[in-house]
Length: 457
Image (tube, rainbow, N blue to C red; front, side):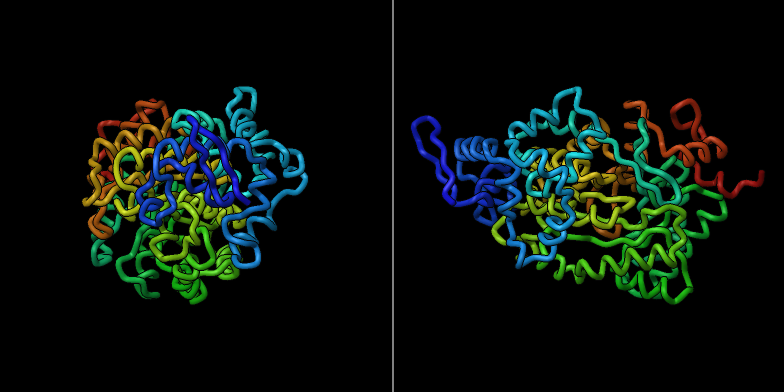
């Protein structure tokens, strides 16, 4: 199926829908590395024009990986709400963009329609949006989920406390946890990326996070981000309890297999954590994604990284997770090169995640070999707050000493909350007030002093 348009006297041809999706994407170094990006700005504009005139049906019937070849495609297609799909099937992508942006289109209306959109359709809409479109539309979509507490209420910017340690020293993890809590960080989850992925280590880290939470009656969730199979073994052993099951996911079956997972395994993990986990609510899964992971595992099937990222969200929504976040600059400049690409990727991911009905967070981050600095990262953090991002990361001095990348710090989250009139999750905010850390919409003078947890009352 050859698709073409004429622009400034030149005819631009695209071999199929997948090619149009790739060429219509805003420039990403990963797509250029894969040899599928538009060669010129005019070719990108031409591709956007062609894409805007395709219908929802055109996109649905041409997934970037065939149904019979890919379990992620099958799950996305089989989950589709056919009644919602029929209502929009003949709408063009341009018409869908306009409808989403109309101020009278509500969050409830968007969520009903989104059930009829495949991930490729949502990706297509985002590709003809400007950055302001993404911020405006992302902010109007409201998604709430519940583990021990509920995330997604109006006026909330939550945070994951990420007290990673290079050798998983329990004392070091605890110290970083107390520091983060003293700044009001950790309402989304207390989550550690372990340096050592073993049952014993996962159990020890799970237990220390749980002990801190229980000792101080902190209304939050705990998670250790080891491989899903490791977590399942620990939970089945009965020697530790955890609220959330974590796993990194990808937008193709082959890339998921590179992560050591299948859709059936995720289904099993979801059922296990519902049955044996300690969560009080119905949402027990935590997924991380990031543009470029499919290319990095040679599993992109000739598709662009942003469309594949959207397919991650189609996979995630099947399991009704409590948290999802895109680690937007972690893989490096080979996939997201500079500030412009970093900002764009973060805004795309939050909007597209929200359009899938997901509680979308973002690890605004970068590696030290990217032409990006902390000023750029702080700009993205502010934009994420405006986009209605559910949560961001909180690390001491914004520096992950185990994963060796730069993210967002305790102070950064506090500043953006105050600037945008945002607060922590309700129950967590009330706990902070009881501890004397939070008052009248901001941190108090006690903030940043972890010794408050050890002083006699």
